[in-house]
Length: 59
Image (cartoon, rainbow, N blue to C red; front, side):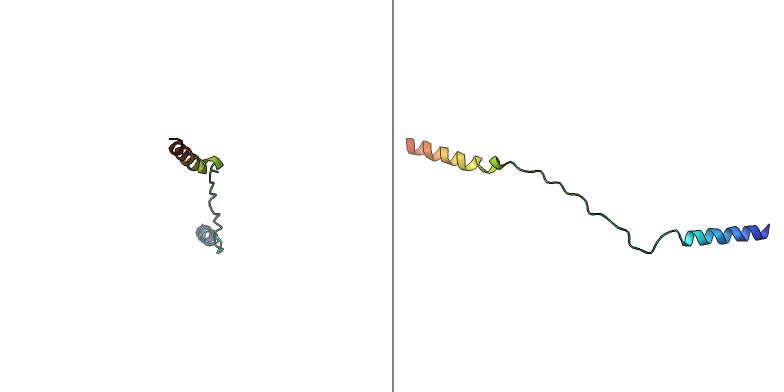
């Protein structure tokens, strides 16, 4: 009975010693999703400026 307890202790110690690997864990980079901006977003200010200049010239 005593031998069985000692054998179980050795098995438990050996299995916990080999539980992990020595290699570094592989960590994947997070995926970054950027929303595409519309091409007309940059056209609003120049068109507004053109309307203001045309209104000033018309007066």
